[in-house]
Every structure is written in C-alpha cells, then in structure tokens.
Image (cartoon, rainbow, N blue to C red; front, top):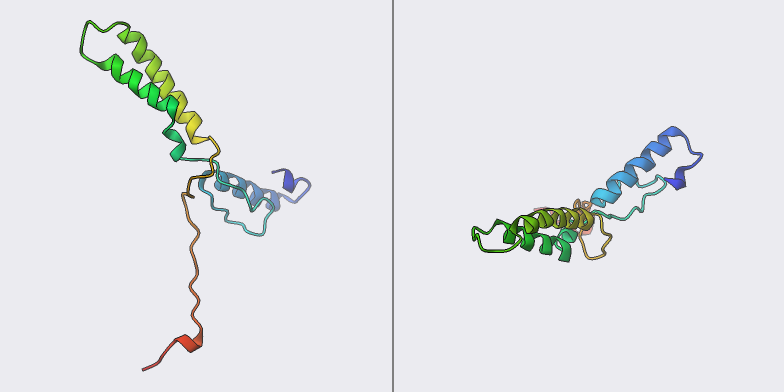
Length: 118
C-alpha cells in the first residue's frame, strides 16, 4: 500500500485489491498497478505444525473416557487453546513451500505453421 501513496483513488483501489488478493490467494488481478508482485502469505500447509499437533493430542487425551486419568479437564482446555493458536498462527506464517490457491491460467499459442488443414 505504501507504493500507492499520493496516487489517485482508482490506483489506490487497484493496489488494495492486489494486496488483499495477493496475500490470500497469490493472484493479483491488476498487473499494471503498484504492488502487483505481492507474495502469498496465507498458507494452508502451515496449519499442520507442532503447536496444532500438540493441541490435538492434548484434546484427545482430555476426551478419553477413562476416569482414572489425571487432569483430563485441564488437558482438554489446554488442547483447545493450543489447537486454536496453532491453526491461526500457521495460516499466516510466511513459508516458501506452499502453492498458490489460485494458479494463473496459461495461454497456449499455436503458430500457423503448426496447424494443418485437411
């Protein structure tokens, strides 16, 4: 958004659209606007991390139907918190190993010498 400082409102709206969609999906609809190279930062792959895994295990421990297990209620509460924190922080963690949610379409060009008429 800093790239559109002092620009007209239309250019700022295009930059805002690029920033928002670029961060979420990796696709920027306005290629000529400022901020067209916005990287995707929302990562579905980031959900599966050590915090969400630990929270899930703690939640499962708290839900076991065995009465003799110690601190089941505390484990269930801790598991809910860890699972929520792990998922939310994992979605917005910047990683380089994820693919874009929306991939840009590729145009196929065919030269006239490759086309045969019968």
